[in-house]
Length: 360
Image (cartoon, rainbow, N blue to C red; front, side):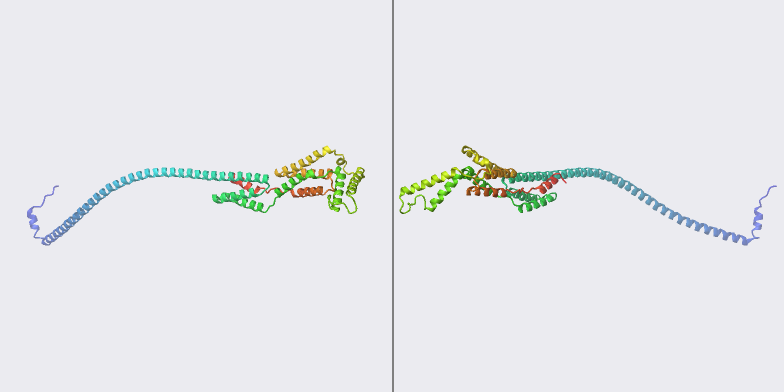
């Protein structure tokens, strides 16, 4: 079944029949047109706004692109600068390492020079002290030791090295100990021994006691009579006085031919006249050996020689003679003068020098 569209007549006939509906349609059309106009206006405004936003976005995008290009350029420059800085830093580190190496080598060289200078100073001071000690032993004087210690102290003070402070303290202690020490008077002892050597030839032997006694009696009688050239007593002729003196001499000699005495040293009595020379020379040699022992600082040997000389003096020479007694007294004084006084040793200073030389 097909529908037949209405004809215009029907439509026209129907139009007058509904006039309010047409008015409503126009109103609707007007409303729709107004809405459409508003929509168009809004779309235009929106389009304009979108165009503005698009332009802004385009500008921002262009700016961003420009900034990105600039950022890439800056980044590239920064990278180049970083690479250059890294290269420079590497070069600087290399130079710093070289400088540090040179500094360490220089410090080692300075320390080596300082140690070498200190070691040379220590060795020089030690050698000078040992030489001064030998000189003191040879001369028997403390002056070489005192002078060497003072010189060493001054040199250490000028060096101003802290590692040599123990050496300086040890030198001070030894110097104080030496200045308070005393030694034997070697010069006086040598002079006394020389005097004894000169007196040996004048000492009387024990087997010449009778001759010495007769001589003493004659000297005493001459002193009592006023001298050998005194005039004879009054009432006595000169020839009588000469005969009396001759008789007295003959009487004394006759009395001395026979003498009874106790012999404590038979060897002294049996000494022949020709052996007396060798006996005196032997005594001189003992005294000279003692003198050499004192000069060589061999005090034990010098005491032994003086003891042997004292024994020979008491054994072979007349103990009643004043010269023998004086010689015996001089020998006893010499033996007492040779004291077992060892020269002060520099053990503390030498130990400190050895420690400093070892670098401890």
